[in-house]
Image (tube, rainbow, N blue to C red; front, side, top):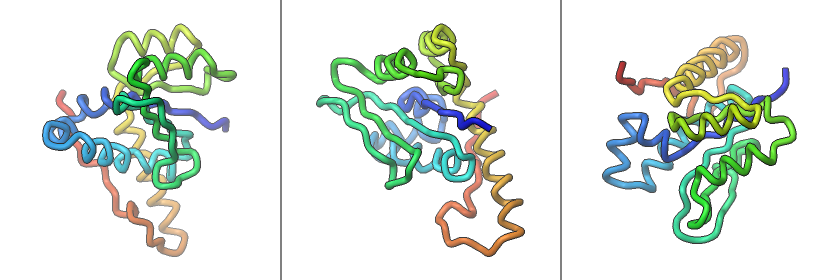
Length: 162
């Protein structure tokens, strides 16, 4: 199976998930870290290439690995471009856009993904993929020796409004 690349609109996700939206009002940096940790199982257990794009901190664009995890990139846009611009540029530059899934509830970014041959998914749908990645890894782990990884007992318990 070809690896899918999930590009997450970080700020949009923070506002779409009630638990993170509340945390965002208190501490933006902590809310971002919570979201990044929440998404980890998608890369580590689900095997997705994962990029989370946030609006920048007022400087030039920065790109880093989340906790040194290969295949999990965190991007802060430049103050000029914004996260939406970074996502659009990633879509325009993609050699295999059909392997990209943009995760956002922003209609303009979703349309941009479709226009470039990619697909889009609502933030709420990612929670379902997380559940699947976590459940799949639990069934695999039953047959193997226990791990000491911090998210072994991770469960997605974030409530979504209907």
